[in-house]
Image (cartoon, rainbow, N blue to C red; front, top):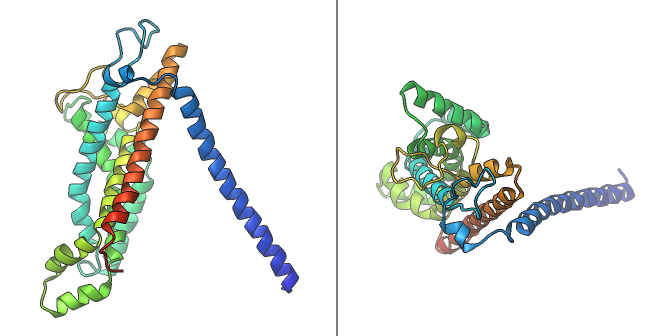
Length: 286
């Protein structure tokens, strides 16, 4: 290939990359712009602190409220993230090369990747079948377990990748000094990978709070804030879904306001994950 032709190909690829980047940024800006423009006028403090009034979804009653969905989403996402963390951290530790052979680790990683790609609605349907078999109704506990199952593959893979990035020399030096494998994992590897672990947890929380399909089967929906794990719990994604399906403009405006709140939560969680990773990674040995 001549020099002139290589330059032409390089410029063409650069132009293609810039066009792709511009398309992605324009799509993100359009989504955020529509949500902000339509949701900001309907958003108010009263909307955040009160549940929906009686007859609101039928076009009767003035003023919408999303307190039930906001609190329910936080309950479900926080509980699901906590439950998934308790399971994911030991699994991520077990996936390190000093514990399992390479073939076993690759098989488990493949299964986790398959679970990662399964649509959340399928996971919700599976959890619903299990709940129906045992005679359980939709509840906050069901939503927590479902979200934990949805985000667990993501969290395990992120934690395992963060732990595998720890310097091998530190592990070898600790083992040479007589430390056990478990002691090295707890005292050295986990401390070195705290930024990655925190990022994995916060990103999984953002993934869980925005899921709607799985909760439709397991957590149910209620206009009231749940007071126990056995009561149904609303969520912001489901509130947006139900309100957008309404033929009444006032209800639809409430859906965009709820979408704006959900967007702000995801942005804050993502920014917090990056800030925590930067702050906690100051003393990490590279």
